[in-house]
Amino acid sequence: MGTGLTRRTFVELGAAGVVLAATGGLVTSHADAASNSSKGRRRRDDVGVETDIAELQRLMALGQLSSEELTESYLDRIKRLNPTLNAVIETNNDARKIARRLDAERRAGHVRGPLHGIPVMVKDNIATDDHMETTAGSLALVGSRVPGDAQLVRQLRAAGAVILGKANLSEWANFRGGSPDFPPINGWSARGGFTRNPYVLDLDPCGSSSGSAASAAASLCAVAVGTETDGSILCPSGEQSLVGIKPTVGLVSGNGIIPIAHSQDTAGPMTRSVRDAALLLDALRVPGSSVMGVPVPNSYTEALDANGLEGARLAYDLRYVNGDFGPGDDDTLAVIDGVFDQLRQRGAEIVDVTSVDPRDPDASGRIPFDDEFTVLLFEFKVQIAEYLAPVRHTKMRTLADLIEFNRKRCQKELAFFGQEVFEAAEATSGDLTDPEYLAALATNQGFGKGVIDGFLGQGFDAIITPSFSFGTSPAAVSGYPSMAVPVGYTPAGRPVGLWLAAGFMQEPTLIRLGYAIEQTINARVAPTLSGAVPPDPAPFPGCEMAMPGMPMAPSTQSNQHRGMHGHHPRHW
Image 1 (cartoon, one colour):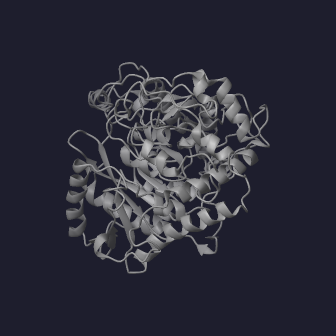
Image 2 (cartoon, rainbow, N blue to C red; image 1 turned 90 degrees about the horizontal axis):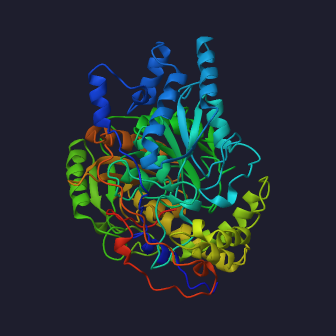
Image 3 (tube, one colour; image 1 turned 135 degrees about the horizontal axis):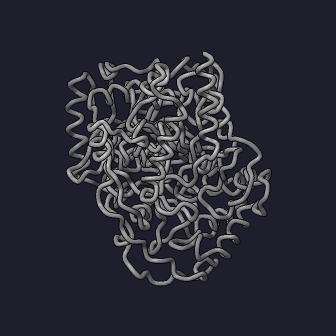
């Protein structure tokens, strides 16, 4: 392709591509809210804080809470906390009206299901045919009109959910640009600014579903929907003490979602509990009794089993943490080791994969970074044009149009890093029969399936990795499901999660294991928005840097000073 860029280059850039926040006001912590409640002066905007769907439904069934009151509570909380968190790009002006209508249905005896009246936040790359925008965080699509709701949004509305707003994200789902001197920044978009992590404000929120994660973690909504191509549900969930499920590709419709690559893209739940993730997945999955010929349960809640670790065999894969594969973190690994002791007491067998033959095409398990990147570049060029074709009130029709827009608006769009990924995708042939693409796709999918199927074929139920590695890639490139579960915190307050991956359509296995882990560890605590908002990063030096063929100017600061602590590999 002649770009000189590789997927590995951009993954490595992600270690420094972290959020640096804009200014924010004084934040009232959850501890302050609890104090208010204990004095009998519960704030309206603290209704629903850390409350799961089952409890919200119980309160609404008893008449002690209405959907309108709950919606108003979350909107008030967004108004209070979002100036610091920047988790929400836009709220739905119709949310109160929708909630009132759903309350009327309940009073008339009609409850659509577990999501009836539940406020849900969706990522800003998921189309909603209402007064809200769908922009992937980019100014290029501001003012445009989508042809209709994304299919998953139609399903959420039919299930009785209140679409509360649009969550911020890493612009274009982290698939726009970056260089060694000016790496991409997790959680930043030109439209939404810098998303902050509600646990520690100068901690990387991870991307690209940063705002979906922060919205759910800080109780700005009941539950949230994110999207993932490789790691963008799991990584923000791990870093913000959430449960996240990246479903099997095809289980949730991608219709109406701004794409990166059809072979890997999927939406999925981001919630504060495994039960809520299962309930949300019920509403998100395509309707029917089977998907791709594989039967699905009547509800994924059927897989919830507090004793689900009994007899479970888990392959612990550290190959994507150490050495060439990713950053190491002794504090995080220490938390994981302590968790394993508890899991073994509940009947789980945990085996280090270095003692097992994974039976994959490459015995080292080495991730084919360049092949994955090639696949995404080819598919993005084709699919972004397909997505833009029916969008109204915009002149954006192709990737080339977006690149030109960014050049003309470089002071805002390219304020902190460039659009090298866009340019690399534009340099591809745009032909999905191209032998280069087909070869990369075969290698890519063969790697992921080889790793996961290889271990499952030896009697393991799932593969597990710590929540700060490249461990998302095998499931991502194979299209298999994966899941994040909170398991603790480092002494510095950084959330620690465990990532699980299983085979094709094995979401019930992950939910069974994840629920048992959650019930055993009971790790999650509410965030307190501790720490200070850091300064903005150094600006990207000049509009000329956006032009193709121009050499990069010397960096004005080292990578380590562009970011906050808790650096992550780049995730899409």
